[in-house]
Length: 239
Image 1 (cartoon, helix red, strand yellow):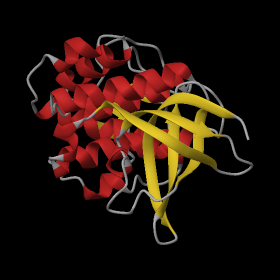
Image 2 (spheres, helix red, strand yellow):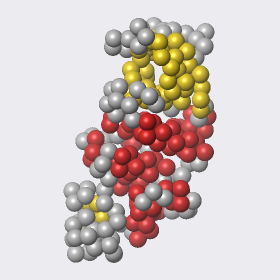
Image 3 (cartoon, rainbow, N blue to C red):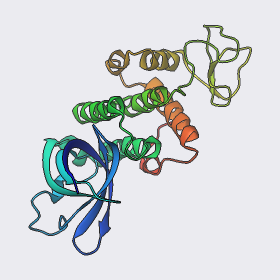
Image 4 (cartoon, rainbow, N blue to C red):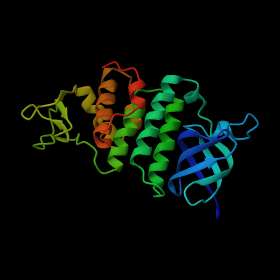
């Protein structure tokens, strides 16, 4: 077995035997990796607490036939605000779940890794309702299937845009209106996020439009995954 080092975000875990834990990691250099951390559930484990979902760690592993073996783990980002706030942790978990669902085993994607780490850092720093939907929309764009928000998905008219429909692929004008209605403020936020101006969107007050975008982004993500996000079912929704 070869020894290697990498950085990773812990996507999910489950118990193995009496003291071990299986991890699904999203690594910077190797993509999604499945590994076992031996003895981490023992009270004397040196790095068990570091290998929980949302953990951002530097690892040393042995490459195995099916599961790699974690031998060292050092914390890179603690993300204390995520772990101390159940609502924020649930929102973070929805991002982990989405990455776990779209990522392929051992298929490196450094931009996706950087996007996930950046989103977790942002959510830890500020609990804005646009952080998670912004991540979902950028993840869909990264996958090459983001909804169209710059003009009507049917006729290319740029304004007004008054509705959103996944079947048509994005925002729609009054003539082709179907699906759910969308406020002008939500249209502006969608255009900021998918226009590469997420930071500007996050600097705006968290009003009703942000929750509209949250609903749109979640539906778009679930449509792509062809299933409900398990973590999203635990979130409180205002719309």
